[in-house]
Image (tube, rainbow, N blue to C red):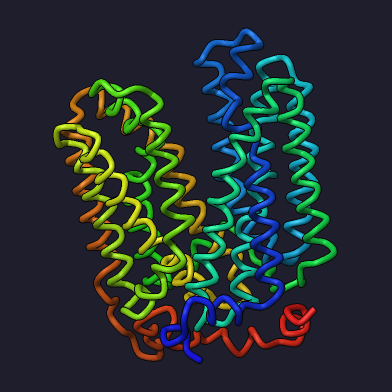
Length: 423
């Protein structure tokens, strides 16, 4: 049955066993992200300044940026499952090394390595999910994948807070232990997925893909624009809330409301959004995110603040699973790691530069920042909405990411994937 016609329960029941193992492992790993939310507090307890703590957190961000490219290359070259196992084993080692570092240079070094190794698995996980799930079911699969990640992050920091009351060392040990556990799950339970035979340089191949695939360029540019907007929820939006007289606990409720809405509502929402042309839905989602953040320019009351959160979260739930499935559909089977890694790299760039750019503009004029967010949301929608010109010999992409299989669907049925998904 086509995904657009089936119910949510039917769509979930048709997902292969390997996809559910991937969801569980991703939840486990994200749940175990104990150290990063408390890294600044940990460093100040060691006697470092907030600026020095910022260096370590920035190094982690730089590591995640490198992980997107390297992880995508390894996913296609080494294989999906082996890349996940390598990522988890090396992440555990990096996290334990960070727990023993005391000098600032070593802390920054191991923090960067923790970001690199800890996020190395993401392109491989996305590529493996696309290997296991045919094009007609990928929207539901990517929504379930995002739900697993968000659920893990929703419960993880609370557990980390309890561990930190006893000793910060337990944060590092718990983080490393969950990474190792996911590595074991991946090694013994995940199918291998596809593996390409690429010999080209990763950066050169990425450039070739960007030069030739106009649709991929569109989604990357649109995602960068909306990513610069969305990351304001982790930086300037907290300042806007406290500037209007609300306590930091209100900001905490904002983050919790966003996460709760994603976990509870995103999967059911995809039952409706996947019935419509994918590019239009992504554009609508990006526009809602921009308008949601632009609404911060209005007088802040609790109802309006809740409206802001609901509005940009609705945009997130509409756009993000569709965008992930859309990129997976664009990618040839042997380059899925590269496509997913490059797509993740764009979001890493937004997370690295978005908060600082937002802070600079916020210091000049909060009104200008929020109006700028609205304009970026409009720009992102305008970038993804137009259909690229067709060239001779270039097959048109299906209207939605769920209506027809991509050219790589036949490759998806190779024996190594089919047998892996039946294990």
